Image (cartoon, rainbow, N blue to C red; front, side, top):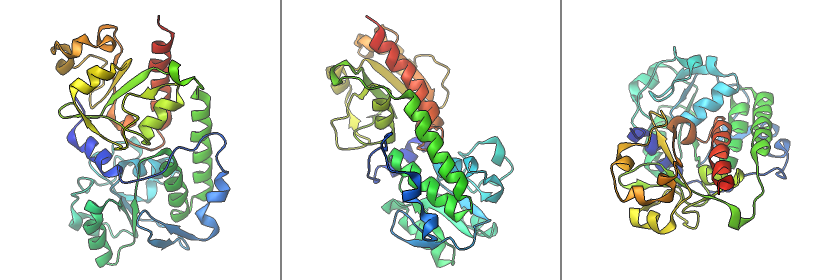
Length: 309
């Protein structure tokens, strides 16, 4: 079973972000540190004061919720979405979906910060919260550098700057561990399936595309500017990816029926050679701390495809 529609909704909102991945030569975390100015700027260009740590936070962006937890800030969360399942916040009340939350439930938590999306479609929601006098941090999340920026910003807002710097450095170091420099012609092509019908994949510049390149592969559609393009099965057959990775809510490792029972999909070498892999959508669809886990899992699939005759 492919991941629930809400998982793709997170990605669809994320496409508006720009930027590219930080590599091992990237600038030091301290040079990006918003705690120096005491002011954080969100994805809309709105400034928030970090003079006093926020103690009652509602997060509507699962990847940023995971950042808050990784910073040790679970106790500062008073509201989460129904898609946040980390054990550390199991007692935190759910306020609904990511873009259609229960606003009254959020107001009841008396938050001093609401984390939401900076996408134009979510602007009305941010405006509504601000109309009640609630500070809003609106996020754009497309690339690895967006994760780094949000980690540092949230660390500043939550009074956890040291933890945020350590988290960013940890993720960079772990990605460096799995980084592989491979000539372009030796990179296996990877089709990452976000959604099967219509078939939605990753284009250029997303964190998924960056992770694929980090581990020595290349996205099957990395020449497309659209970060999350809808492509035809004919286009997939034409490009004949070496590996197919499918984001799924239930990643038991079995080839899904929509591939197994389709004679057209079965003509792909990746299918015939057993290079179809189901992966946890919550890990692969969120540009958060668990990107490291996604990278190491991808590395195994890409390495196997590169080494097989």
